[in-house]
Image 1 (cartoon, rainbow, N blue to C red):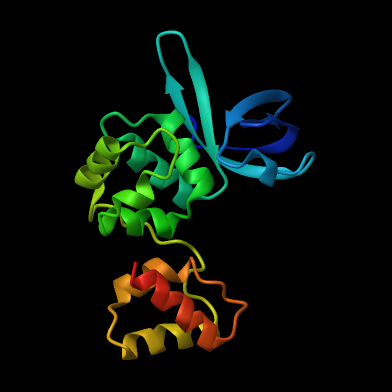
Image 2 (image 1 turned 90 degrees about the horizontal axis):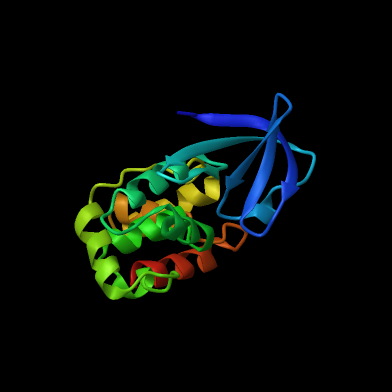
Length: 185
């Protein structure tokens, strides 16, 4: 089994990229292929799916995204082809928060996720995903935001789940407003 590929992107298609490593091109299905630039070097964490009549590679730029993918495909009835669009359109903190808060409405917005599968995801993964997103709490404004939300009575775990979804280019006041909206969902 492969852990990751490091190489040059030679092709970008609607749902996959080709990464060349040692003169071999590997087709890797990725969440957002157009986030890769041609002729640039990338490190892609890969998952290999080997079936009776298939050998498919799924890849991710960040290790956290790869880890969440592995958790998602462990759910009964949720395979790689369903998990990939979830990661393409949702943020890691948002997906984890939706699972922990049992937000079925959020989960059913993803393609091929009905209410039954959303309930299965919650049943299998609620409280079991402990993925720290790099850079989630890094600069002074984020620290100020964290302190403000703690002063308002929110718990650290709740705050960390929404920090990745807040636009940190906004003023502290607007960041607090945006955070409160996310925390009240």
